[in-house]
Image 1 (tube, rainbow, N blue to C red):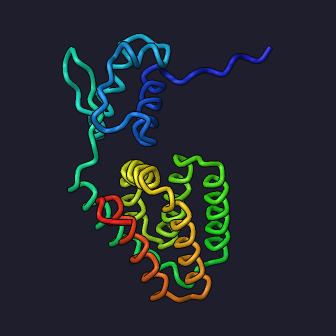
Image 2: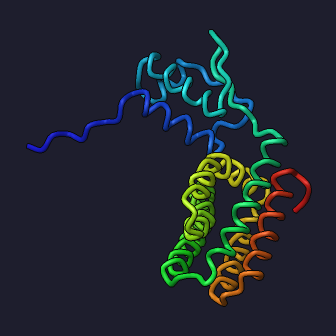
Length: 216
């Protein structure tokens, strides 16, 4: 008989459970998590819970308090400003470098846009945020600069967390994001580097304003 599928190590299961819940805001900033509750939720002992929480603290998602638990850290105003500024620098450069866009890039962006529309129709905001992030990351990857791509990948967790927060606070933003992504894709299809850069700049500027709570 085939052997049963081996489960990931206990600490890895706790890590994945907590991290995903923080990113999709089931555990919001300010939530205090206890080792006992997490151990029960994942079905493990407390030892792997401690190991997972230490790793998440190193990633800047939690703050550990001995004998109390782990506090989910809220996203600070400075962190928001830093992420938006970095994204603008990287993505505007990348979209210019991606022109003329190869057919493989255009096809992949079309697929991601369709997937985002499907996820939005199902009301799955966490997956909408994932496909949203993948859309932008695909353009960065096609800029052909591996160092830049690795830098951009370091923003992933913050992008997902902020993206879900914006869509929860502004449900109409989901459809607007899709429209703005379609505009970026149209400019790439047309080989319009300036237009594509302007579309990226406008899109990120509007998203940044919403994350900072400055408007709709």
